[in-house]
Length: 146
Image 1 (tube, rainbow, N blue to C red):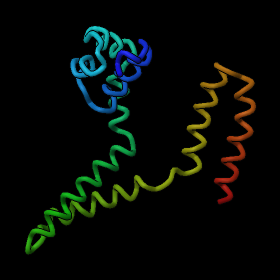
Image 2 (image 1 turned 90 degrees about the vertical axis):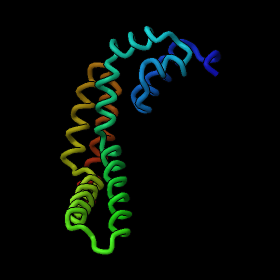
Image 3 (image 1 turned 135 degrees about the vertical axis):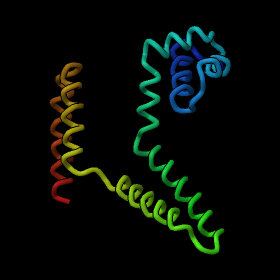
C-alpha cells in the first residue's frame, strides 16, 4: 500500500499516525516506509507535537478518559461488599465532569468560534467570507430561537 502513496499522502499518513495513534517518529517511519529523519523534519517544521497535545486535550478525548475511569470504578465498587467512600466520591466527581462536558456549547461559544474563523477566512477568500457570513448568521439566529 505504501508504494501506491505519493509523497504528500505519506506525509499526511505519517502525521495521522504520529498525532492520533501516539506512535514515535521511528514507528511512523517504519509503518509509512519513509526515512525517520524525514518524519522528524515534518514533526518539527509542522509542530506535530503541539497538534498531538491539542488532540489529546480535546473534549472527546477527555470524555473517553472519564468514561473509562467511570467504568473501572463501577467494576471496582460492584466487586466490593461495602463500597469505599473515596471511590464513591470519585465516581460522583467523574460523572459530574462528564455530564458538564457533554452539554452542547452555548451560543456565545459558537459565536466566538465563528468570529475567529471569519477573521481567518477573510484573509484567504473575501467573496466566500461574505457568502458564509449570511449562513453563519442564520445558524446563530436559529440557535438563539431554539
